[in-house]
Length: 387
Ligand SMILES: Cc1ncc(COP(=O)(O)O)c(C=O)c1O
Image (cartoon, rainbow, N blue to C red):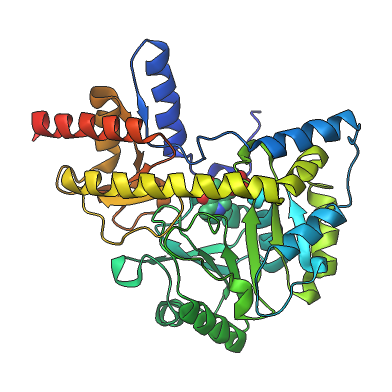
């Protein structure tokens, strides 16, 4: 008898971006030049003070488990970097293996079988995939430029179902880079209090917002769950360290589940993360934010000039979500053609949901300005040869 995998595993879709990346690498191995505009992580390595702190932790032989909810000094440093109306107690912070660990923890705490979780479409794919692993019902709500690609209190109210339990918002969003306003967050928070639902906000791209400094959703009230990470702004994707802020009533259960689900986040990475929150790293990280800012301002007009439509200016992250209907109603096919014929890797909308995903692609500007300009030159040329 052949062994069968669990239904839940069969139902999880692959990432198209990973296929594109693998094909891009294959083409490069054959000697082709490929411009990468698909990648979802900073092109910079971790800042030097982070690397030094990681090395020091190894030299000091700090290779044992930490407490399940993380090193106390790291939790305190995380709490201290928030500028909130009310100080945040370090007790409410659980350090996790990336924000992916935080996402799993929060879903494990909140979702029973068949409970609904409301998510914006387009949105970060793992949210819906992990929710399905927890046997939750994924309730996707189509969003567009009229709400800056974010849920609103009206949309939450309209799409609320009897089994809805959690509303998850990512601000800035992946793939659109757009923010939710403080007013909307507060209104959704109040509505959920009334309905007995939980608000979870993913702030992983908060450090990478360019024209303003966004407020944390923690200001909305004491019952909000906030996910964050050292991956993106701090340039530490490979270290696998993130965090979750939980309401007081969930401190004990979060700790208990963390003990069971992953024992602790990687110890060396936690020491490195303390350095990421220090003054020295901050100087470098602010400089990098300005580099991303400049890249966005260079790339956005080039994308528009090529004939793609960007309906809301992205406020942050390093993505631009663009309508490609001028060229194709099959964004997957378009991405394949751009990769193989133009030598530019871009992510198809299908990775982020189903609402108009066939006419959208995501450009990442985690690449140098020279490469972004060259990528758009190649795309322009491909368009003039193929339209
Ligand atoms: C919106 C969003 N949330 C969470 C993650 C997970 O990141 P990590 O587990 O590296 O913290 C990503 C990664 O791309 C993301 O884009």
